Image (cartoon, rainbow, N blue to C red; front, top):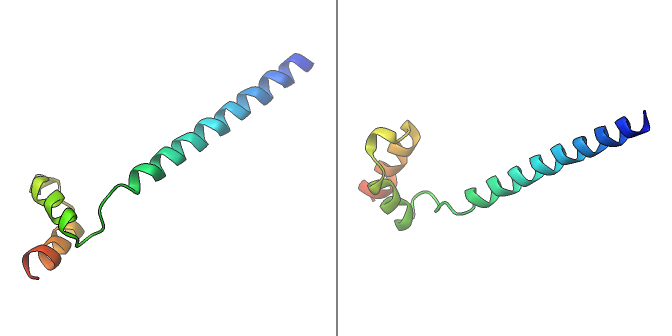
Length: 68
């Protein structure tokens, strides 16, 4: 029974470690996106197919990049 508890504890820690790693990776990726309204963001949106834009992105693009 002791062996089973040890295995369960290791499995639980592995899951927690994996979740922490995924969260850290996601946070790192989101920090790389340029701020809305900057020249870099306008260039990024210009290169992105307009069919992939969200309604908010389209409104922000018009506000910050077209009607300056």
